[in-house]
Amino acid sequence: MQAKNILEQIIDCGIVAVMRSPEGSFLTDVVKALIDGGVTVVEITFTVPAAHRVLEVVRASLRDRVILGAGTVLDPETARIALLSGAEFIVAPTLNLSVIELCKRYGKVVVPGAYTPTEVLSAWQAGADIVKIFPADIGGPAYLRALLAPLPQVRLLPTGGVNLETAAEFLRAGACALGVGSSLVEPKALAQRDFARITSLASQYVRIVQDTRRSLAGA
Picture 1 (tube, rainbow, N blue to C red):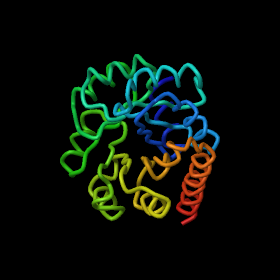
Picture 2: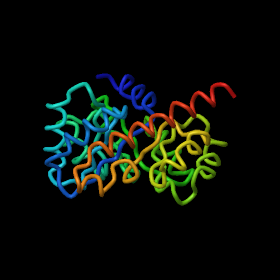
Picture 3: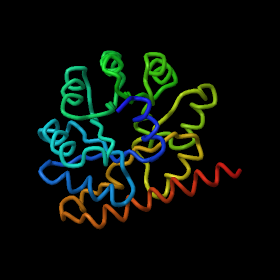
Picture 4: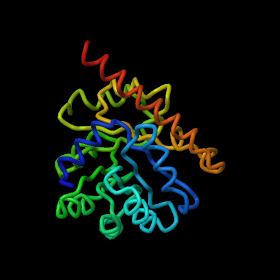
């Protein structure tokens, strides 16, 4: 899939589910649960053991039902492994210009992490498709709004501190989409294999995105 289409689908979904787990053997079932709830964009972090194998299994099982990404990518070597394993976008908690360069070389979407205005602009100028604001819980929606005042052209993805209570406010502040980790893919639900809980949470987040965007469009 072309990078333009991947980017459009990420923004259209509005939720990037961030999956961290001490084991990866059952994560295909977690991704299915997210899809059932309407979240079709999933980031499997490289803190998951053998994350590249998990990416391969999920890609082979679900194919085009999911926009599959790799997260916690700290260097271009890991980025290339992730892309070869089936990732369609790369997410990082930090700004590494070599990771951006590699993703652009292979025509893939890249979402580097940044926090200060200088980091955000540096990432954007280097070719980031979206800039991940992390950790977003420190400044909250107000900080996102402040960043966008002088940088309205930059697409921002807050991650960290996004939950059912804050999601709508981050969208109102200007987020193009939301990175949601443990408040969506709950550690307790993972431990108990409670896939119904994950599906329920996913549907709640999707509803918030849809309702908030409708509200903003009518404002």
